[in-house]
Amino acid sequence: VICVVVIEMGLITPPVGINVFVVKGVAAGVPMSTIFRGVLPFWVAMAVCLALLVAFPEIALFLPGQMR
Image 1 (cartoon, rainbow, N blue to C red):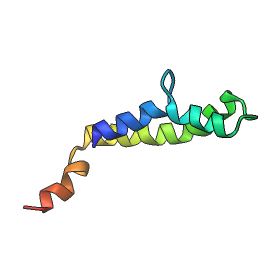
Image 2: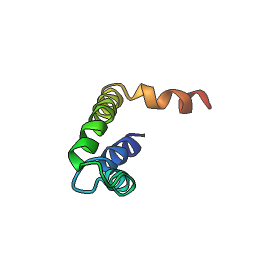
Image 3: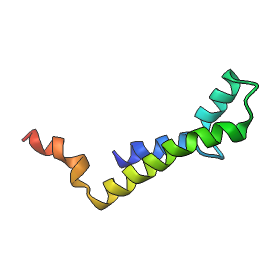
């Protein structure tokens, strides 16, 4: 779960930022800085989720633990 969150964060941040470049290709008239400003709240939310998962791993392990 942590790997997925970190990969998602990497897809919207430089230097890779593949998702941001896709949006730039679709909305060619929009400056890159505007796209990054729009992405920032989502990145902050993912960073908070990542911090919670690291601090409380039971969040990610609850459902698999119920399968016993």
